[in-house]
Structures are given as structure tokens and as C-alpha cells.
Length: 318
Image (tube, rainbow, N blue to C red; front, side, top):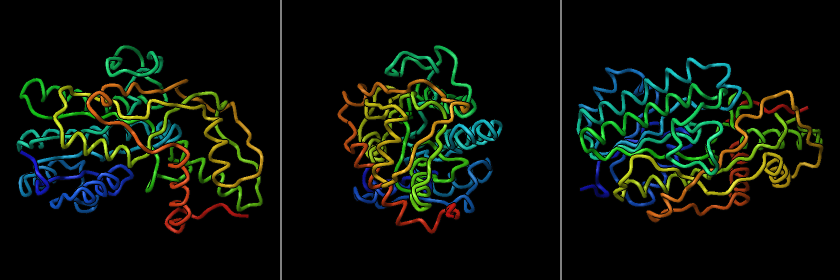
């Protein structure tokens, strides 16, 4: 049985998801949390991961480690997005199995679902048709992780579960304009434009696609829920069950940031999947649902961005 003294390893604790999970575990009174930086433990190194598991024998592994990025990064580095994620998750899953971890929580992404799957996206839609081409490399890696956990669950009866969150945002997000996701990129673009005298902001695509956004602290609470409860199935969506258009998101962020200039849409750039709304009924029926509203969540994220502005690459001012 797991308890507050159980040995829990968070892979990727310095990322947005991993850091949120770490904060949540500490706030809940968990006292034996294993963390390692990328320098201390290269999760792509099979021998290093095996040595770590052998020495520390974690009872729980929370896999929040991944190479992530938006449309631009996925398009430019397809091999890295595929191979690095496969290496990381395969090492963690296999050694968690070999060293008999009691629970493994694999965190993926809603991009595992087909581009034109019926909305809202149900877990049963997995592998029913083609993926969105712009992020297929990352998606294929994450699908492999889901199936590896499912295979271990089926063959060995172990408590390996996969959580698929929708688009995430929050503290410690990636605000690099070359590799960030849409919400974080908008926060930075509107902030820079405001500091430059409310200059116009150019955004990718038509603005018509619809997206769902989940605050990372809500995801962390879902991870704690999965840790403290037995989930009978292998795959669960984690989201809010509500979405909005990219244009509506832009207007909301513009208002929160205080930018007064124009918004221009570059329709020559790709839109990505037309809609990605999650069916979150499985998690809701188990007793978990999100709590942080989008506007409040964006406001707190923007405040965090401003408070930590020095850690980001130099803003384009003037």
C-alpha cells in the first residue's frame, strides 16, 4: 500500500508539468520525493536509468519528462521529437516494470488522437484514423508509451495508467517564441507589443480553430488523484471539457496583458487540428474534475511571467 512516505520519483521535475506535480505532492504531505536534473540523470541513457532504479527502488514513477513544443518546433525537429521521447519513456516504463514499481503514471497529450476524430475526443478514438501531420512525431511516441503501459497492465496486472491532458499552461511554461505553445506565445507577444508602445501583434493561422486549455495545477491534482485511487482503465483524458476559438483566446489574453494595439492573422501559416475538445467524463465519473477557470488561470500565469521575466531570453523591445 502506498502512503505519504512512499518513494516517489518525478521524471522531469523541472518542467512545467513536473514542477506542478512536485508542488502538489509537497502540499499534500508527501515526504519522500525523488528528483534528478537532466545533468544528474539523462533519461535517454538506458544504463544510467537502470542504475538509478537499482539504487533507489522507487515505488511510484510519475513520467512528466518529454521533449515538447508547438507546431514550429515539431515541424523543424521531427526526428528528435520522435526518438528522444521514445528513449525517455521506454527506459522509465521498462525499468519501472523490471524493478516492480507499485504504480506508474504516464503523462501524454491530447495530440495522440486522430486529426478528425469525433468531438469531444473520447479515449476510444485512439488509433482510429490519421494523426495531425504537424505533430505526428510527438504523438506517435506518446501513443507508444500509452500502449506500453497498457501491455504491462494486461500481461502483468500492474497499476500502470496513462493520463492524457489537453493543452496546458501555467507557471514554468515555455515562453520561447520558437518552441512555445500558443497560449504562452501569445502572452509573450502581447507583453512585448505593449512595452513597444502597443504595436500590432501578428498571430499564426486564421484564428478559427478551437482549443481547450487546462491549468497545469489542475493536471497536478489529477495526477495526485490517480496516485491515491485505483483507476480501472489504462487511459484517461484530463481537461476542462470546454473550448474556445484561438481568436477568442487572443482577445482574452490581450485584455489581461493590457495591450491596446491591433491583432493581425497570418493565414499563410498552418492552423493545425480544427478542434481538440476532450471528453472528460471518465475522470469526472471517477470523482475528479478541473477547478481553475481559464481567465483566472491566464491572469495568474501572466503575473508569474512578469515576476520571472529575467529568466527568459531577452525581450524584443524597441
